[in-house]
Image 1 (tube, rainbow, N blue to C red):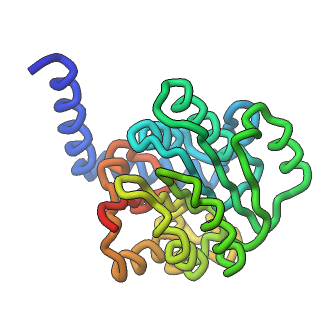
Image 2: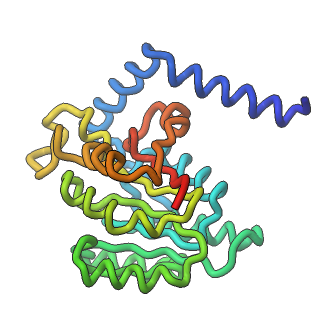
Image 3: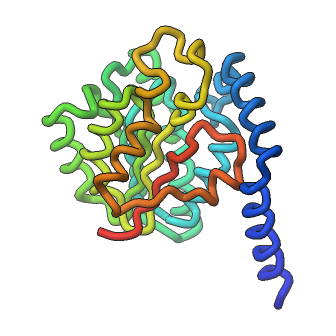
Length: 250
């Protein structure tokens, strides 16, 4: 066995071992709870734009995008635009490596703040980014997104807008069929189910009503996707436990 294959074999064994290490997982979850209460995810940026994300999940996204090689990434939830910039920069790298052509990123948000829109449009990555304002689960918006997606050969979807059970479940039902086989629908902030109630800060989502409960219900109805637990076991610290959904069939 050559060194590369041995390294990969050792890594797979280590990820499995870590995923079965209850003490390590408890420590990781405790750290995650404390860091979330201290707004840790607000500390980072990507190419100059704030990205409300953990570095661990950014690394996971990088690995997924390189493996899947999508030419289109669709995201619900825009905020400051850091995630859109991240996705656009990854597609730009895929183009530079000759892996795809004409990568496109679509962001959807019910309220794109004007200062954020201007900053995103002024960014060097803006030529790859399209933004739609409106509810991601509105029927007209869904039709608009499907029309846009017709030009995508391989599509990856990220859901990170309203985190209530009903909204996320509606997004999953609306957009999961756009995800290419072998690609992912990534549902962020499933960790709400595992956080203390003060984490939700009087928002409409909380334990029992959040993205993770929506994922669980959706997977009862649809067997086109599986939860990629290897990603979660690799990261240990993630805002998307049970949220990395890999499409395995049509």
